[in-house]
Image (cartoon, rainbow, N blue to C red; front, side):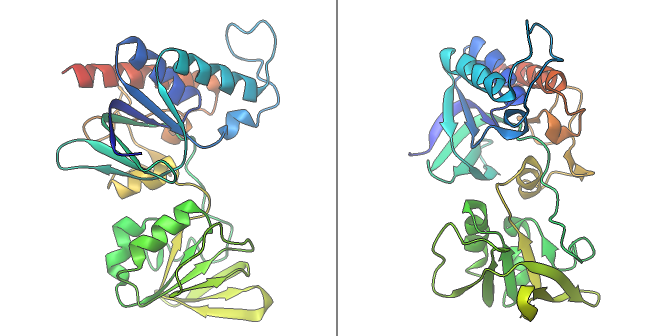
Length: 291
């Protein structure tokens, strides 16, 4: 897909993202909604504490109903993974997708649920900012000419690896016990043993893997799973508070035209709260676009 212009781009198709999309579509906006899976709501067995339900429904059914509503109102529903979100010099937001190329819009909403927690690996918290990074776009330049590793094996890990390739002296893909989902270039080493712990002094110097293996490295870029709202916010230079994206009363971040809603803002993890924040964000985006 060639870069496509929309009025609004929504990252996440759960209750917050779809709620915003409903308001935007009804206001006549061209909307793209991007999501890869059913998220936390899709894994919920039964939802019975939400207004208007005659009886409890499966979380996956509620997700499907919301997406169908958006589709019927004209939203472009894209089943894909967002690898990066960039705010261009012309004030347009452009999302890089794993399979569909890129899409762009004048306003964007982060609604991907909770920020992914750091993996439970000894030393990973201690070396954050001292060798451990969650954003290659932000920090790759700091590791030019050094030995680094990317932790992960999916499309997001591939994206981070590609950011590092022109700068790092050596790159190792640490898949943490899984097989990589892509074929890395020949200059990238692949290590499938699980990462047990990180070590070093004031700065990271290496890692210990299962089987008694050791891995010298000066930088570790964490890219397990898909990019979360927090990951995308970091790449845009936005502040996070306790891992949550900070917003004002209208759900807007500090970047003009960029909003966030739902669990990723640190709100109470309930469908009712996500829908409310999504509606507020949708109305805020409408006002922004009309002005």
